[in-house]
Amino acid sequence: MIGVAVLLVLLVLLVAISYRRHQQSRGQKAEEFDLAALRRGLTARERQIIEAIAARSGLRRTPDIFHKVDAFDRGAVQLLAECAQTRTPQEITELKAEVAAVRQKLGIRPAAAGRGAAIGRGHPGSRDIPVGKFLDLTGRREDQAVALRVEILRNDEIELAVALRTPLGSKPGDSWLARYYSGLSAWEFRTSTVSCDDHRLVLSHSDDIHFVNRRRFPRVAGRWAALIAPLPFVQSDLAAGETAARRADVSRAVAKYAPAFVEGTVIEFAGPGLRIEAPLQVQVEDRVLVVFRLGEPGGGTRAGQRTVTGIGRVKRRRETGQALSLAVELTGLSDAEIDDLGSLADELSARTPGPRGDRATGPQEAPAYVATTT
Image 1 (cartoon, rainbow, N blue to C red):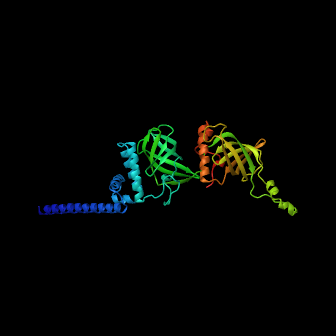
Image 2 (image 1 turned 90 degrees about the horizontal axis):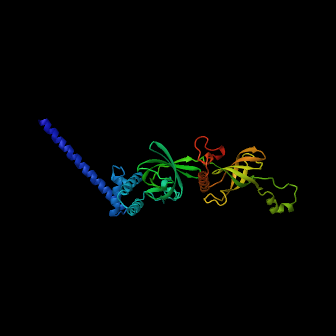
Image 3 (image 1 turned 90 degrees about the vertical axis):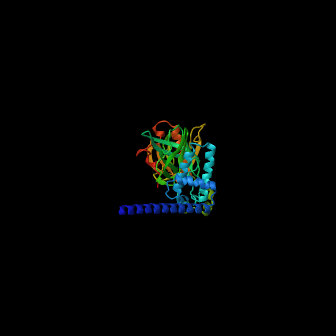
């Protein structure tokens, strides 16, 4: 009985010490949290917001919310998703503004959202995708694969909203693999549904971006008028025996070597890759100057009556009767120009019926000239 009594006393002491240490730890965490909030100049309302975010972030230590970017984003998305069930759209808008103000005071991410560049960070995130760009989303709904192409309507500190072409039933928490094309690279990241309302889907942000090489573009068959000319880098100069007076006639000499265009037809368009039929004798890897016009006269879409001018390399040639079929890859393009060509290919492929107008997949997705260099 004495032994049992001693064990009970020790047990009570252990519980008391554990409780005291727990209280001390809570007090230290509260003191650390108060000090961090004071240093950053948070108001009472802002402290309530960050406490609510910390409670939904999954962190064991509340003060860690001041420097854990992923935890802050996770908690903010969860808080807004919960509030969306009970608050009006105006109240949600005000809450988002308050959360953005808290984020700015914490200095978690000083870069401007949606500008296409990550200022003050070593790598971009989904907040850096400009409004008006497109995302390719893939996921599964009811045991079926779903592939969507959506346009970004809004991209702020908390979430991004996209427009759906057809209504979609997506529940909060549904997972998506998103891909955003930027020049010759593609950004891949995981995201999830925050809310979905008919033609509008709201997604969470991610700073875990994977870069993959963009080698494929949609192929579109058609017949578009084009002009093409050989563009060699070096040409033969005047003969050594010519007089100085003739050498002085610079304008005539330059005109002699100006590009000589011939008429041709673009029969396939795939971003920076073209297939052109033209009576032009060139060899593989020769440089050419190309001018072609996309769309039909009076076309009502953005692709209607678009003229493209560029320098390309001949990647393949094949004789077809009196003309040559040339596979040409446009070179020296900026990321914005490649994005523009990709958007035109997407738009034309959406308007063109049949398999040639669709975005191809698999090894047969595009001919060799569509593949871009690393």
